[in-house]
Length: 437
Ligand SMILES: Cc1ncc(COP(=O)(O)O)c(C=O)c1O
Image (cartoon, rainbow, N blue to C red; front, side, top):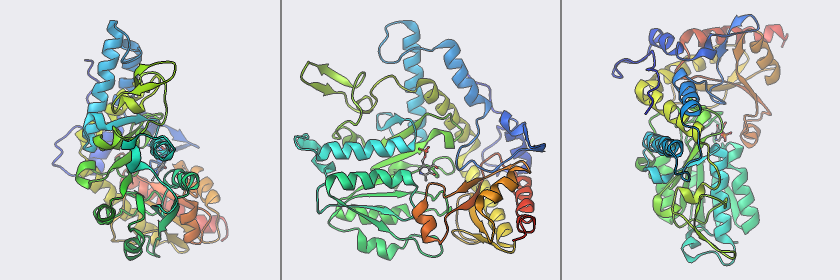
């Protein structure tokens, strides 16, 4: 099998990351060397989409140059190699999140993974659904519990499922410090709860949620647990089995991979009992004009031609992250996150959302600048080559809870230096005077 170029940063993973090593890491990311508006790019929007190292770009190109073919069908040489590369990628990415290969379903992104679940549960709720799908069925009187800090991707699919089945949707509130109200959670999760869906880490607050506590509450009442790992899989060592969740979703483009690929983890016995969402080619055993039988997981949920080159490239991204070491990536981002929060809190008129300085968070910070709209803040920063995200970050209910309609978010990754954070802080400190706020 083709070997991609060794990343330039490879060092002993026992050594903590520092600016010098990060500068070497940056050499693997061509886009970080471009300029924007006449300034060197300072990319602080990895929470939305991360950048790709050369090994990822090369893996996708190599696939198209050498192996491009449909998988699981052809008898010819290229088809065999493409199938091997596709399934090797599954093995790599499954191991990356602590799953077995047959427990990882390729999706386009986390949004599709969550929709896949909600539509499968809907199919299980319809009259005539197979008996072994009963554990996923919802009906009036049942409850789905989410949290007030969810990204719309982990809210709207459950709203839709509740609407269509007559189940009720409940939410665990967020306190003023940006943490989940766990007393309220204990009161909400009860005998009617069939599904508990929550984010591992908030894309706005940076809060890391207490998975173990929430899973215990769900287990005590036999509810299914769905984890949105979009903001955790790229940044900390994720082990879905150790976390004991039933399902987890993540997006490749947030973890150095290409767009158009993501993963849905599900416990094997659940996936094999769950009715499929999309149906068609490649997911069947036998088809007559009246009926079809379905393959076991993962093919059961992978109808049609798959995202093959993207899966191969995502495996290269997982390898890059593993070789760098998730624990040192997490530690470096925690340091950048601390610097961000402390720096922002020191700027008059800036309110940081979520845990304050000194409290655990992933390496991002969303904030409000008194008297200046987030879009103006974003444009001001962009004119200095600094890329951040502005708006409600697909979390309108959370912003409403915080008394805001929009905020500005800076999010770091393994390729950001403390100089990036300082350039950003320096620019933010000039926002209010520029806008005379
Ligand atoms: C916490 C969280 N969940 C879900 C998503 C949706 O990811 P995607 O748009 O890749 O499906 C995001 C993306 O920002 C996110 O941050």
